[in-house]
Image (cartoon, rainbow, N blue to C red):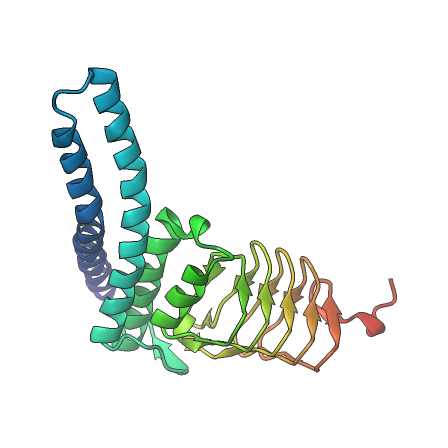
Length: 238
């Protein structure tokens, strides 16, 4: 019976997430749809190919309008409903675990439909801050594979390289464990590297491309970590 109840809860929660997605995406699409309708009507009297071109340009503009609206709508939902994550251990199906799933589902709305266009732009840092991340000045983020943003701290001038994965959660023995990740000033998280929860990366430290930094690792300032699992480069013998 417990298994059936858990499956039912999961189904209901999934449908709830779909409903939220429909509402938020619909609102984000609305301004761009209005623009397309306006351009189509404004083109009455022009040749059909001109009118069609106007509509195509409107559709292209509508996509970017959608993306910008989506960023602020998702951020507004997190702020209004106070969906910030807190460190700790949470049983599966608990309110804390469900909140975690909801928050990351909101991030996925942006990640899966628009985030590629805002990497390395001011919009990515705006989005991270709206989702609760502490982001310093002149931070460069070139990856959409960061999760649990309200537990992420990135200091001034730090860099997260392309396709790097930064997560603040793990699943152990049927429990969700949330721990902060802190990236120090001018630290570099390299291409395709993986940063696991509880990690603290010191100032000017470098996590080499492809490195996997284990849970609760404390990276000393100005050190270089590489390999799988990542260890200080000076300690490697290969």
